[in-house]
Image (cartoon, rainbow over all chains, first blue to last red; front, side):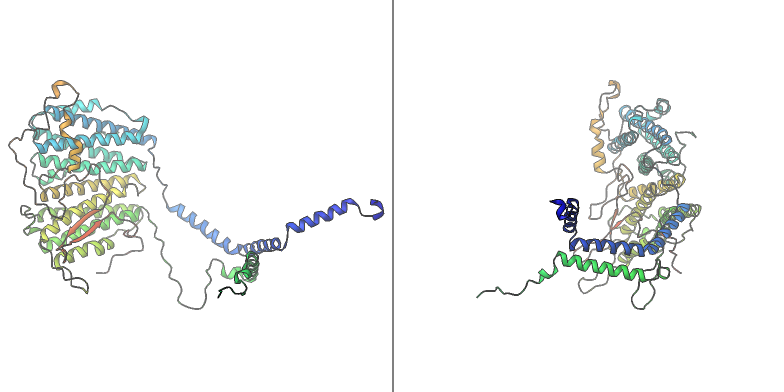
Length: 231
Length: 329
């Protein structure tokens, strides 16, 4: 029967397939295809325009790159870690010296006691902040050599201790300025900067509390030496 | 009656199919027009309709090390200029009803002025090292939006308007000016501190902070002149908790109860009276703060409200860009 009709099943199947294809691509489909073609041709025609923009942007980027410095890292680098660890040990030392002075020196007035304990807590807070920044690599002990060097200065009369504490604060500021000149990481630099601003005020307050009236001394015209040496 | 009508629904003629049809035609038309254009003649140009003045070319506000550093210089110049204005007016030599024990602070502030001029020159040297040009006048934004209004309000008051009565000159110019000195010293220190994470070179950071230490100490000293004995904030003092110092260390070292200290025969100086103008504290916070510094001054308006401004560290609207220049004269 198939032979007499002369129509192979394959062709019928082929026709059916064509119907299905027409069903999948109705007028809506044609419109969609037209839109796609339109967008494509529009994009192609606009290529010179966008091409010009892209090359301008590229040259601009190249120009910027030649004049812009490398962005510093946020996290402390390996060298930063060494510097900040040293700063942390110094802070713990300072805190220990304040503790010693508060506990061993007699005759603190209320104002003096308040300032001394506040500064003790401040140094502890700075140590904790540095420790948080350093993570596992943070040292947890003070610098014993430095502590022994200073501890005799943190005993005796209150006025003398206050003046010595002011010197220590000035040394801390000098130390941090040394550290800041070498730090690469921004997080460490920001923290150190916020500590410097506060510790600078400590010297003025301690000297005022000790009865110093000389403005040059109160404003620390001559900063003490850094505790970090030149290393 | 009924509101029903037999009018055709208009939206029926704009269904999805219609949308696609119109969209397709539009895009295809656009493609044809774009293809017919001459790309060589209009590449990189925005199309224009009609004639008119050409659009002005705005200069690129690039923020780099030199911009940041000369902005810091501009802040220092503004502070120095403000101090010079105070000294010229003699405000710091006068007596203050609010702060009767203040005394003449002209010499102190004169020293501050010199220090800020030196700081400005140092910042300019750094800006030049960073490839920029020196800035030799005050910060335009700080001057126009903060310092000029403060001086105007303190010295002249404010004229009456349709909705507000006249405000007289300050009831205590000396108080307002010395409070402005504290504010500007805090601003100077905070500006340098804020600079640290913005500049890329460690040497710039260290020099900025070296200058900041001086401003920080000046703020502490002038705070103590205004409010003697106010060394730390109540909050910091309470957090330090002096009563808890008898801890667990060696028994021989825990004998002093610092909560009940010996008076030592010294009496704390009398604090100025509390007013709506906050009194400064020598160490205002445990860390250096970048928070705005509030300044309150001048005479109150008809409701007693004084001029109140927040001084903040420089940002995009107060940077001194390469295309900025000092005003003539």
